[in-house]
Image (cartoon, rainbow, N blue to C red; front, side, top):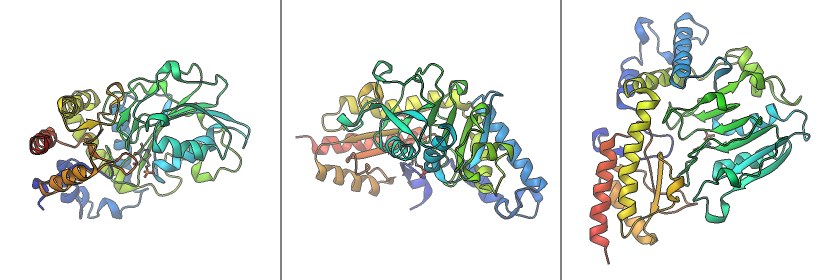
Length: 365
Ligand SMILES: Cc1ncc(COP(=O)(O)O)c(C=O)c1O
Protein backbone atom coordinates (compact mmCIF):
# COMPACT_ATOMS: atom_id res chain seq x y z
CA UNK A 1 0.00 0.00 0.00
CA UNK A 2 1.13 3.54 -0.63
CA UNK A 3 1.24 5.97 2.32
CA UNK A 4 -1.27 8.20 0.49
CA UNK A 5 -3.76 5.31 0.41
CA UNK A 6 -3.69 4.73 4.14
CA UNK A 7 -5.09 6.31 7.29
CA UNK A 8 -3.28 4.82 10.25
CA UNK A 9 -5.45 4.70 13.38
CA UNK A 10 -2.82 2.90 15.49
CA UNK A 11 -3.00 3.50 19.26
CA UNK A 12 0.78 3.62 19.53
CA UNK A 13 3.31 3.83 18.07
CA UNK A 14 1.19 6.07 15.92
CA UNK A 15 1.11 8.17 12.81
CA UNK A 16 3.58 11.06 12.62
CA UNK A 17 3.06 14.10 10.39
CA UNK A 18 4.24 13.28 6.85
CA UNK A 19 6.01 16.63 6.71
CA UNK A 20 8.12 15.60 9.73
CA UNK A 21 9.11 12.28 8.16
CA UNK A 22 10.00 14.05 4.92
CA UNK A 23 12.35 16.47 6.68
CA UNK A 24 13.88 13.64 8.71
CA UNK A 25 14.30 11.63 5.51
CA UNK A 26 15.98 14.51 3.73
CA UNK A 27 18.39 15.03 6.64
CA UNK A 28 18.98 11.39 7.39
CA UNK A 29 22.46 11.08 5.88
CA UNK A 30 23.71 14.59 6.45
CA UNK A 31 22.18 16.87 9.07
CA UNK A 32 22.54 20.55 8.26
CA UNK A 33 25.89 20.17 6.45
CA UNK A 34 27.50 18.37 9.40
CA UNK A 35 28.35 15.35 7.23
CA UNK A 36 26.64 13.12 9.82
CA UNK A 37 23.21 11.75 10.57
CA UNK A 38 21.69 12.91 13.87
CA UNK A 39 21.85 9.21 14.77
CA UNK A 40 25.62 9.25 14.42
CA UNK A 41 26.55 12.30 16.49
CA UNK A 42 27.97 12.48 19.98
CA UNK A 43 25.27 13.71 22.30
CA UNK A 44 27.87 16.10 23.70
CA UNK A 45 28.88 17.58 20.36
CA UNK A 46 28.14 21.24 19.61
CA UNK A 47 25.90 20.35 16.69
CA UNK A 48 23.79 17.97 18.78
CA UNK A 49 23.65 20.21 21.85
CA UNK A 50 22.14 22.91 19.66
CA UNK A 51 19.38 20.50 18.63
CA UNK A 52 18.85 19.39 22.24
CA UNK A 53 18.62 22.90 23.64
CA UNK A 54 16.25 24.07 20.93
CA UNK A 55 13.92 21.07 21.39
CA UNK A 56 13.85 21.60 25.16
CA UNK A 57 13.04 25.24 24.72
CA UNK A 58 10.33 24.48 22.12
CA UNK A 59 8.78 21.94 24.50
CA UNK A 60 8.80 24.49 27.33
CA UNK A 61 7.21 27.09 25.15
CA UNK A 62 4.61 24.70 23.63
CA UNK A 63 3.23 23.90 27.09
CA UNK A 64 4.15 27.21 28.77
CA UNK A 65 6.27 25.34 31.32
CA UNK A 66 6.94 27.65 34.31
CA UNK A 67 10.43 28.30 35.73
CA UNK A 68 9.58 26.07 38.70
CA UNK A 69 9.51 23.01 36.42
CA UNK A 70 12.16 21.19 34.39
CA UNK A 71 11.71 19.23 31.16
CA UNK A 72 13.53 15.89 31.08
CA UNK A 73 14.10 13.58 28.11
CA UNK A 74 14.31 10.06 29.51
CA UNK A 75 14.12 6.43 28.36
CA UNK A 76 12.39 3.32 29.72
CA UNK A 77 9.01 4.19 28.22
CA UNK A 78 6.12 5.68 30.13
CA UNK A 79 6.17 2.45 32.16
CA UNK A 80 9.44 3.28 33.91
CA UNK A 81 7.68 6.30 35.44
CA UNK A 82 5.32 3.88 37.19
CA UNK A 83 8.35 2.97 39.37
CA UNK A 84 10.27 6.24 39.28
CA UNK A 85 7.38 8.23 40.73
CA UNK A 86 6.94 6.17 43.93
CA UNK A 87 10.69 5.67 44.37
CA UNK A 88 11.33 9.40 44.13
CA UNK A 89 8.33 10.81 45.97
CA UNK A 90 7.48 8.44 48.82
CA UNK A 91 10.52 8.98 51.03
CA UNK A 92 11.65 5.91 52.95
CA UNK A 93 10.80 2.50 51.47
CA UNK A 94 7.47 1.26 52.84
CA UNK A 95 6.80 4.42 54.84
CA UNK A 96 5.16 6.73 52.30
CA UNK A 97 1.55 6.97 51.12
CA UNK A 98 -0.04 7.87 47.80
CA UNK A 99 -3.51 8.09 46.24
CA UNK A 100 -4.20 6.47 42.86
CA UNK A 101 -7.21 6.86 40.58
CA UNK A 102 -7.50 3.54 38.76
CA UNK A 103 -9.34 4.42 35.56
CA UNK A 104 -7.80 1.97 33.13
CA UNK A 105 -5.08 -0.49 32.24
CA UNK A 106 -2.03 1.74 32.63
CA UNK A 107 -3.27 3.45 35.80
CA UNK A 108 -3.81 -0.04 37.22
CA UNK A 109 -0.28 -1.15 36.30
CA UNK A 110 1.10 2.04 37.87
CA UNK A 111 -0.97 1.39 41.02
CA UNK A 112 0.31 -2.19 41.34
CA UNK A 113 3.89 -1.07 40.81
CA UNK A 114 3.59 1.69 43.44
CA UNK A 115 2.33 -0.82 46.03
CA UNK A 116 5.85 -2.28 46.14
CA UNK A 117 7.13 0.95 47.67
CA UNK A 118 4.54 2.30 50.07
CA UNK A 119 0.93 2.38 51.23
CA UNK A 120 -1.33 3.02 48.27
CA UNK A 121 -4.94 4.10 48.54
CA UNK A 122 -7.30 3.61 45.61
CA UNK A 123 -8.79 7.09 45.49
CA UNK A 124 -11.30 5.97 42.84
CA UNK A 125 -11.79 3.10 40.45
CA UNK A 126 -13.95 2.74 37.34
CA UNK A 127 -13.48 -1.02 37.15
CA UNK A 128 -17.16 -1.64 38.04
CA UNK A 129 -18.18 -0.50 34.53
CA UNK A 130 -15.15 -1.76 32.59
CA UNK A 131 -13.49 1.64 32.85
CA UNK A 132 -16.09 3.39 30.71
CA UNK A 133 -16.15 6.54 32.84
CA UNK A 134 -14.02 9.02 34.76
CA UNK A 135 -14.91 9.55 38.43
CA UNK A 136 -16.11 12.97 39.51
CA UNK A 137 -14.15 15.17 41.89
CA UNK A 138 -16.73 14.48 44.63
CA UNK A 139 -16.11 10.75 44.26
CA UNK A 140 -12.34 10.93 44.88
CA UNK A 141 -11.39 9.61 48.31
CA UNK A 142 -8.32 11.68 48.95
CA UNK A 143 -5.80 11.45 51.76
CA UNK A 144 -4.64 14.99 52.62
CA UNK A 145 -1.42 13.49 54.02
CA UNK A 146 -0.54 11.61 50.81
CA UNK A 147 2.89 12.16 49.25
CA UNK A 148 1.17 12.52 45.88
CA UNK A 149 -2.02 11.85 43.91
CA UNK A 150 -1.70 9.88 40.65
CA UNK A 151 -3.97 9.67 37.62
CA UNK A 152 -3.85 8.88 33.92
CA UNK A 153 -5.28 11.79 31.90
CA UNK A 154 -6.32 9.74 28.89
CA UNK A 155 -7.05 6.02 29.01
CA UNK A 156 -5.79 4.80 25.65
CA UNK A 157 -7.41 1.37 25.74
CA UNK A 158 -10.85 2.36 27.06
CA UNK A 159 -11.17 5.71 25.28
CA UNK A 160 -11.88 7.87 28.32
CA UNK A 161 -10.31 11.20 29.22
CA UNK A 162 -10.37 13.36 32.34
CA UNK A 163 -12.21 16.58 31.58
CA UNK A 164 -10.90 18.30 34.70
CA UNK A 165 -7.73 18.57 36.74
CA UNK A 166 -8.42 17.03 40.15
CA UNK A 167 -8.30 19.35 43.14
CA UNK A 168 -5.96 17.84 45.74
CA UNK A 169 -5.13 20.74 48.06
CA UNK A 170 -1.42 20.75 48.76
CA UNK A 171 -0.84 17.15 47.59
CA UNK A 172 1.29 17.12 44.39
CA UNK A 173 -0.36 15.66 41.30
CA UNK A 174 1.45 13.12 39.08
CA UNK A 175 -0.14 12.54 35.73
CA UNK A 176 0.38 10.13 32.85
CA UNK A 177 -0.35 12.17 29.70
CA UNK A 178 1.10 9.62 27.27
CA UNK A 179 -1.90 9.63 24.98
CA UNK A 180 -3.09 13.23 25.11
CA UNK A 181 -0.02 15.40 25.65
CA UNK A 182 0.22 18.36 23.25
CA UNK A 183 -3.43 17.95 22.22
CA UNK A 184 -4.58 20.90 24.36
CA UNK A 185 -3.21 23.56 26.71
CA UNK A 186 -2.31 22.34 30.19
CA UNK A 187 -1.69 24.42 33.30
CA UNK A 188 1.66 22.83 34.16
CA UNK A 189 1.87 24.73 37.45
CA UNK A 190 -0.95 22.56 38.81
CA UNK A 191 1.19 19.42 38.47
CA UNK A 192 4.09 17.95 40.40
CA UNK A 193 4.97 15.60 37.56
CA UNK A 194 3.62 15.18 34.05
CA UNK A 195 5.05 12.36 31.97
CA UNK A 196 4.36 10.90 28.55
CA UNK A 197 5.78 8.20 26.33
CA UNK A 198 6.54 9.87 23.01
CA UNK A 199 5.03 7.34 20.65
CA UNK A 200 1.56 8.87 20.23
CA UNK A 201 1.75 12.65 19.88
CA UNK A 202 5.47 13.36 19.96
CA UNK A 203 8.07 11.07 18.39
CA UNK A 204 9.06 7.42 17.88
CA UNK A 205 8.95 5.07 20.89
CA UNK A 206 11.99 5.24 23.13
CA UNK A 207 11.67 8.77 24.50
CA UNK A 208 9.72 9.71 27.63
CA UNK A 209 9.15 13.38 28.33
CA UNK A 210 8.92 14.24 32.04
CA UNK A 211 7.95 17.70 33.27
CA UNK A 212 8.75 17.94 36.95
CA UNK A 213 8.41 20.53 39.68
CA UNK A 214 12.08 20.80 40.66
CA UNK A 215 11.19 21.08 44.34
CA UNK A 216 10.08 17.41 44.25
CA UNK A 217 13.52 16.13 43.25
CA UNK A 218 16.15 14.92 45.69
CA UNK A 219 13.98 12.92 48.07
CA UNK A 220 14.36 9.52 46.42
CA UNK A 221 14.56 6.26 48.39
CA UNK A 222 18.10 5.17 49.22
CA UNK A 223 17.67 2.12 46.98
CA UNK A 224 16.76 4.19 43.89
CA UNK A 225 19.11 3.46 40.98
CA UNK A 226 21.00 6.61 39.99
CA UNK A 227 19.50 6.47 36.53
CA UNK A 228 16.02 6.50 38.04
CA UNK A 229 16.59 9.53 40.23
CA UNK A 230 14.96 12.72 38.97
CA UNK A 231 17.70 14.65 40.76
CA UNK A 232 20.42 12.85 38.79
CA UNK A 233 18.62 13.67 35.56
CA UNK A 234 17.93 17.30 36.47
CA UNK A 235 21.53 17.84 37.62
CA UNK A 236 22.81 16.36 34.36
CA UNK A 237 20.26 18.01 32.04
CA UNK A 238 18.97 14.55 30.97
CA UNK A 239 22.50 13.57 29.96
CA UNK A 240 23.59 11.42 32.90
CA UNK A 241 23.77 8.76 30.20
CA UNK A 242 23.23 8.91 26.44
CA UNK A 243 19.76 10.33 25.79
CA UNK A 244 17.54 9.09 22.93
CA UNK A 245 19.14 11.61 20.55
CA UNK A 246 17.24 10.78 17.38
CA UNK A 247 13.83 10.75 19.07
CA UNK A 248 14.51 14.13 20.65
CA UNK A 249 15.39 15.51 17.21
CA UNK A 250 12.11 14.16 15.78
CA UNK A 251 10.22 15.71 18.70
CA UNK A 252 11.71 19.04 17.64
CA UNK A 253 10.32 18.58 14.12
CA UNK A 254 6.92 17.62 15.53
CA UNK A 255 6.94 20.75 17.72
CA UNK A 256 7.71 22.89 14.64
CA UNK A 257 4.76 21.23 12.89
CA UNK A 258 2.56 21.78 15.95
CA UNK A 259 3.46 25.47 15.96
CA UNK A 260 2.16 25.71 12.38
CA UNK A 261 -1.17 24.23 13.55
CA UNK A 262 -1.52 27.05 16.07
CA UNK A 263 0.29 25.31 18.94
CA UNK A 264 -1.65 23.43 21.61
CA UNK A 265 -4.50 25.99 21.53
CA UNK A 266 -4.89 25.48 17.77
CA UNK A 267 -4.61 21.73 18.21
CA UNK A 268 -7.33 21.71 20.86
CA UNK A 269 -9.78 23.20 18.36
CA UNK A 270 -8.72 20.81 15.60
CA UNK A 271 -8.86 17.67 17.73
CA UNK A 272 -12.29 18.66 19.11
CA UNK A 273 -13.68 19.00 15.59
CA UNK A 274 -12.14 15.67 14.55
CA UNK A 275 -13.47 13.74 17.56
CA UNK A 276 -16.90 15.37 17.21
CA UNK A 277 -17.27 13.91 13.71
CA UNK A 278 -17.01 10.40 15.13
CA UNK A 279 -19.00 10.99 18.31
CA UNK A 280 -21.84 12.76 16.49
CA UNK A 281 -22.13 9.79 14.18
CA UNK A 282 -21.99 7.30 17.07
CA UNK A 283 -24.78 9.21 18.83
CA UNK A 284 -27.13 8.79 15.89
CA UNK A 285 -26.03 5.32 14.78
CA UNK A 286 -28.41 2.39 15.11
CA UNK A 287 -25.69 -0.27 15.07
CA UNK A 288 -22.54 1.27 16.57
CA UNK A 289 -22.33 2.11 20.25
CA UNK A 290 -19.51 3.98 21.99
CA UNK A 291 -17.80 2.39 24.99
CA UNK A 292 -17.12 5.58 26.96
CA UNK A 293 -19.86 7.49 28.74
CA UNK A 294 -20.49 10.80 26.92
CA UNK A 295 -19.07 13.05 29.65
CA UNK A 296 -15.87 10.96 29.83
CA UNK A 297 -15.12 10.59 26.13
CA UNK A 298 -11.56 10.81 24.88
CA UNK A 299 -10.75 13.05 21.93
CA UNK A 300 -7.73 10.86 21.18
CA UNK A 301 -9.05 7.27 21.29
CA UNK A 302 -12.61 6.63 20.18
CA UNK A 303 -13.86 3.18 21.24
CA UNK A 304 -17.00 1.65 19.78
CA UNK A 305 -18.60 -1.66 18.89
CA UNK A 306 -21.62 -3.16 17.18
CA UNK A 307 -22.34 -5.60 20.01
CA UNK A 308 -21.86 -8.52 17.62
CA UNK A 309 -18.29 -9.86 17.49
CA UNK A 310 -18.65 -11.28 13.99
CA UNK A 311 -19.86 -7.91 12.70
CA UNK A 312 -17.00 -6.11 14.47
CA UNK A 313 -14.56 -8.45 12.75
CA UNK A 314 -16.20 -7.88 9.38
CA UNK A 315 -16.01 -4.13 9.98
CA UNK A 316 -12.28 -4.27 10.77
CA UNK A 317 -11.55 -6.46 7.73
CA UNK A 318 -13.46 -4.11 5.45
CA UNK A 319 -11.74 -1.11 7.02
CA UNK A 320 -8.27 -2.55 6.41
CA UNK A 321 -9.16 -3.26 2.77
CA UNK A 322 -10.07 0.42 2.37
CA UNK A 323 -6.80 1.59 3.96
CA UNK A 324 -8.15 2.34 7.46
CA UNK A 325 -5.45 0.54 9.38
CA UNK A 326 -5.36 -0.60 13.03
CA UNK A 327 -8.99 0.01 13.97
CA UNK A 328 -9.39 -3.22 15.93
CA UNK A 329 -10.10 -2.51 19.60
CA UNK A 330 -7.93 -3.74 22.44
CA UNK A 331 -8.97 -7.18 23.71
CA UNK A 332 -9.98 -5.70 27.10
CA UNK A 333 -12.75 -3.68 25.43
CA UNK A 334 -13.35 -5.53 22.16
CA UNK A 335 -14.94 -3.86 19.15
CA UNK A 336 -13.09 -1.03 17.47
CA UNK A 337 -10.85 1.85 18.43
CA UNK A 338 -9.96 4.78 16.23
CA UNK A 339 -6.92 6.53 17.65
CA UNK A 340 -7.05 10.03 16.27
CA UNK A 341 -3.93 11.69 17.61
CA UNK A 342 -2.64 15.09 16.50
CA UNK A 343 -1.13 13.85 13.24
CA UNK A 344 -4.33 12.15 12.00
CA UNK A 345 -5.77 14.41 9.30
CA UNK A 346 -9.46 15.37 9.53
CA UNK A 347 -9.92 13.73 6.14
CA UNK A 348 -9.04 10.33 7.69
CA UNK A 349 -11.91 10.65 10.13
CA UNK A 350 -14.36 11.96 7.53
CA UNK A 351 -13.58 8.95 5.35
CA UNK A 352 -13.81 6.53 8.26
CA UNK A 353 -17.24 7.92 9.16
CA UNK A 354 -18.33 7.51 5.51
CA UNK A 355 -17.28 3.85 5.69
CA UNK A 356 -19.15 3.43 9.00
CA UNK A 357 -22.27 4.88 7.39
CA UNK A 358 -21.98 2.48 4.43
CA UNK A 359 -21.46 -0.43 6.81
CA UNK A 360 -24.51 0.61 8.80
CA UNK A 361 -26.73 0.77 5.71
CA UNK A 362 -25.60 -2.74 4.67
CA UNK A 363 -26.05 -4.19 8.14
CA UNK A 364 -29.25 -2.58 9.30
CA UNK A 365 -31.80 -5.14 10.43
C1 LIG B 1 -1.66 6.05 28.83
C2 LIG B 1 -0.47 5.14 28.69
N1 LIG B 1 0.41 5.04 29.68
C3 LIG B 1 1.49 4.23 29.61
C4 LIG B 1 1.72 3.46 28.50
C5 LIG B 1 2.92 2.57 28.46
O1 LIG B 1 3.87 3.18 27.66
P1 LIG B 1 5.27 2.53 27.32
O2 LIG B 1 5.01 1.40 26.40
O3 LIG B 1 6.04 3.66 26.68
O4 LIG B 1 5.91 2.09 28.59
C6 LIG B 1 0.83 3.53 27.42
C7 LIG B 1 1.07 2.72 26.22
O5 LIG B 1 0.34 2.68 25.27
C8 LIG B 1 -0.29 4.39 27.53
O6 LIG B 1 -1.18 4.47 26.53
